[in-house]
Length: 408
Image 1 (tube, rainbow, N blue to C red):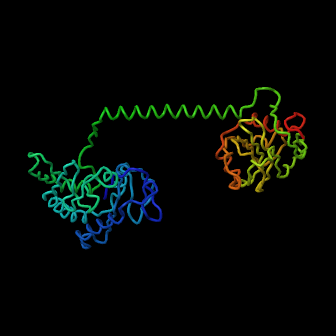
Image 2: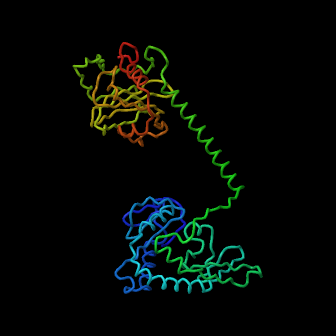
């Protein structure tokens, strides 16, 4: 079992481990198999009796989003380590276990009896590797464990300081009763009763972190309320029984008759794909809209500053519309559905209505203007929910000839 302390989201792609979408600096899976092969060679095939060794890669601080082995290695979060080990109970026969325990006990006893390499400390306080003399930095702590050299991989346990009291290395104590411990582990039982885990908390640092989190929450709440108020002021119509009357430039557009409310037994066909734009100046920009959700669409654009209607459009399912828009800040309202029931009922209770803001820069130089392309999926995903009564009022005003909303 190999343990790593790297933080972040641990995923895999094509059997390669990734942290936050990027490859690790070292192939941890290869390292796990190398250790498994070393243990297999130490025990040799006669003692294993055909059994295989399963390597485990455990991340103590990372968020593992992997389900299942990767190249034969079980990649786990520390919270799933114990249940995974206990799930392997019964996979090792008693006779094989009794043969392996003395070998592992002897190997661990010999390793503990050896002196850990002394790691000198530099003048600046950093740890220096005794093998390659690499001075450890804070950046190394993010990519490798505290007891492993990030350059050559040597394991160092003790740090030699400039204090005269630390000049004599301390010999690691041999494991106590290794045979009993291994017997309990390989039998799938707890060797010792559980003890509560206590942590020493740096209260000053914790208080600063909590204060920072509270300040961030206050700032985010204020930003959200400001944005919500801005959107509401643009899209909320006046609380009157009649539809709002918004003046627009006097550009004449082809007259489109307003369909009457359909009878329930006589469905009305959705209008042909078309658009009526109020801006035909040189500052207009080409707007290409594609319907990609298989539904009929009604689309309205408003000039936020002038408070005028800039575009009204009907687009049938899976069709494309090409028109123009003014290069100013615009708000849009989009309504989608399949069963068209007229401009008063729209698509009935199944109508899906969204609204949002977009910015079309008016500073773009002539000759460098590129067309704006959008789809119904994009507008629905980016928009926020628009109340259906409010949406009906906007659409009724936009398509009601007698209401004076648009001069035909």
